[in-house]
Image (tube, rainbow, N blue to C red; front, side, top):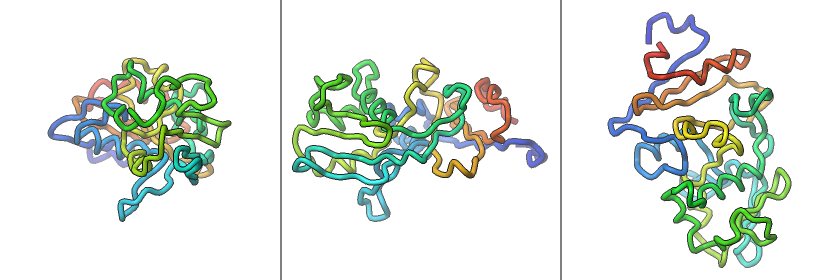
Length: 232
């Protein structure tokens, strides 16, 4: 970047991987470079602490019910997605249990063809995915409660939910960006009153580009980057 970058209304961060980043989509976080990058952008219901024990992340709390076969998560609905034009005139919205249901349904959808489907394969009733059946494996109850129903108790499931494959993406974003979605990155932030800077992620020449700008800026310019040279 040039020496006068401090005078610009935005800053650019380049994250280089010698192998290259093939996708910013959690569903395709199957190799080391993608895993590392996705882990810096997305978050899931659960994260691992310094002792590698699961603890709530986007979830405020969780309960194990029905002899461990039902996991009920209380979603932190005070968390918002970073500003993006896919949310329409609002530019942002609060996290919802429906985003969690959508993310897990998408992970298991054969059309997505995610290698991460192994996390739930054989552990849930796959025939009830994306249905309205009361015992479906992924179920949003209002905005703040999400239930994960297993065929039988499986002790490691909380740790598996901390994997990048299980990161939460906003409902509607994939449909909005279509085939370009794997090159877009998303992040949640937890203090809506603070009005943080916009954060946008892009893939350019196989590398990650992060761009910060003021909230009041015209969002259209965040979606017209063709290469890293556009950012200097």
